[in-house]
Image 1: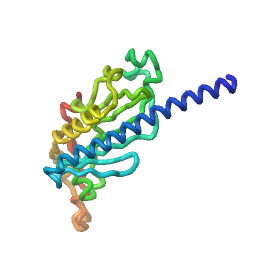
Image 2: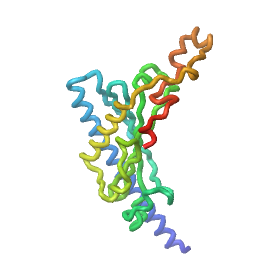
Image 3: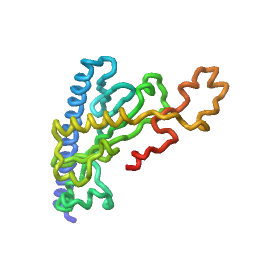
Image 4: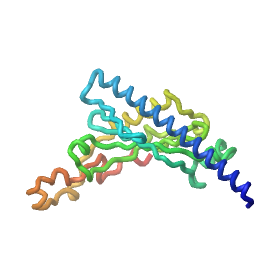
Length: 218
């Protein structure tokens, strides 16, 4: 391959990746501002139950009731495996570059996990939003949050779609209840933990610890 041809290929790939990451940044900032507006609106009636917190350029969190949603934007662009369902869509087959996507992850944690510094508690990825060069998106996630791959060609990032993603994520987290962990997993405790008052913190807490929900199979 000649230098000129290689240079063109590298330039075109760089332009594509920059375009995708710019779209993802814009979507993330829209998600940040929309989330803040949603929380502030709820906080007018329930000021202690709804809190928005900025955590930097690529992260923010919203607290509501006993839940926290952490939104994190990845700074890289991703391609899908050729076996992924997205790669079979006519929309992508017509232009493979449409499959290159930025990614925003949405995690669900318990507020107590942060408030009581329970560092071993577990959060769950409930959705991840993929955005491409044309500002189209789809979501991999739980039933209430996820969006069918087949809508990739028609789903555009805008205020309305972002608001729907945030509220659906809140609804899922609110309905995803904390269950008692299996007895055998918590029946033992050391003398050291009791004496040092670390027993409370050392017991891992998570919404589905030791259980599998039917909805998690969907």
